[in-house]
Length: 443
Image 1: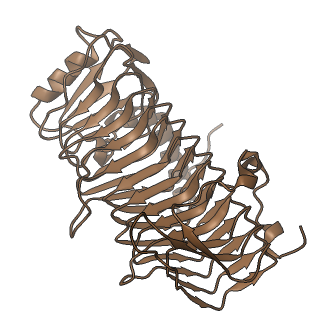
Image 2: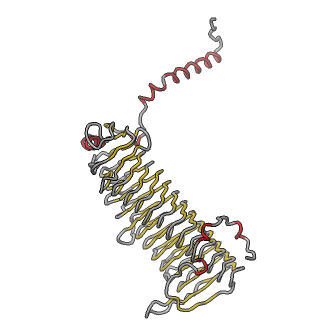
Image 3: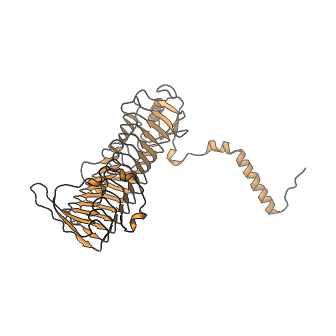
């Protein structure tokens, strides 16, 4: 049967569109071969890894050496499911950068027989993705600027990612780090380091360890920890003498503190910090800090401890069902701290405890804490003068606590630990809902 060609312009346009779509569908596999790679994977030379052997033609070792010799940006594509390494690989040193990925995500580099680093990135602008790296002293060592690590699994190393000198503008995203001694170790942070959408699990010392030798000044290094998930690590984040931004993360079951920052400047906002063994947030000797809109619940020692910090603002947090609520110890008189507009409720110990500290405390709702709603304790350190807290208290609601009247103690010598009533800490595994404690009632 002969199908007549449409006579009007509209019908002809419809037929033409259908015919074009059919031609594109038939030729899609041919067009795929000519499709340009994304900009972050563009390279002038491409080397394929076609064997899981440690050495020889088609091996990863030979591909790295070829990429290092290449003129211009090079790309290494792992096209085998697993490579077992017998000795350390050559470093990536191509000055134009290297793209290192796999044809199928999850290709494994087994470094259990390697004592040093599995991959050593000494090439600027290197992009590593879609690999699973297991075993070895370090999964990755980064010692060149502008490295991007994405969609990686780094498992069972002494250090998952070791960040060395010269590794500024590092990005680690969309990855899993688990069962390492340290997840990401920044021995000498330079410039900006960003960790985003990374899962950290079961680290023996810390998930992230970022430590500099001296407090930050203008143009100092900064660590951004944004939108990550931490579970069952000894400590979530340790940031000492750096500028730290900790935003939108979830911490669960940390062995001590979820966030420990010291000596620098910190912004800690919109995090969930749940069911840890120590204080949810521990800050000391901060130059300045902004701690706001965090949910901090069911941590054994307490929600937050600030020690000898200045210009630190604790504002609009939901702090409930911890050992203690918010504890401030010492502080800078010329740069007073602020505790304002927080919900501090249903703690086993005191709601707000000021030890030799004189902050501005205003607009807080301090409800249903088992001991005192607000307690002031003088601090004596050996032969030094006693610090007597003289805070500015205004417009706080202190209600239905074990003791609602302001309590004054004398001669505390150190920061508090887990309240005796909470020593076994099993209560931290209970329900998480804040709804039951927002309205005070009889226990």
